[in-house]
Amino acid sequence: MKLYRHGDTCIASKGSFFDGNVKIDGNLILPAETHVWGRLDVGGTLELGPYSTVGGGITCQNAVIGKGVKIKGSLHALENITVCDEVRVRSLIAGGNIVLRPGVTVGEVKSDETIFVYGKIKSGRLTGRNVKVLGN
Image (cartoon, rainbow, N blue to C red; front, side, top):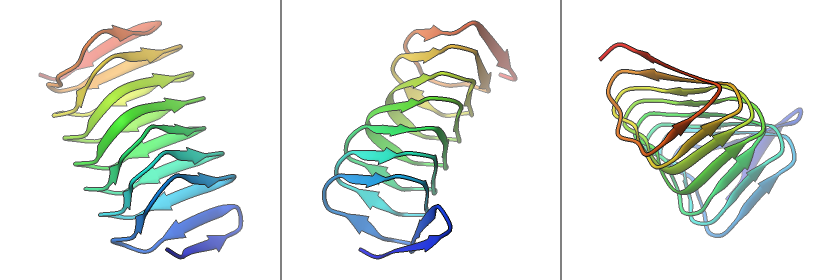
């Protein structure tokens, strides 16, 4: 699969798939319906487009996860994580804030800062400095 580089950001084309593990030193933008069958290690910010899948775990600096994404492993971010609607992920661990949108299904969630929950989610234990639930 081909990645396009723009400065320190790598961009894949829509509908791409990666057979195996992926390691990127900078930022990574994966558009809608991109599939990674292994682990995903990103040195900077990860933007994972809607309806994508990751077969293993993810490590990154910051993460924005689009609607309907399925992550079979854990997501570890050194800073912030934003998880959009209807995402499925095993667990979330962040050094900063975590934002969870409606319909998220997640196991354990750990944050060194605040966990923001918008709407109804399915989760295991939520552990953070603050947990704020907004909406129903």
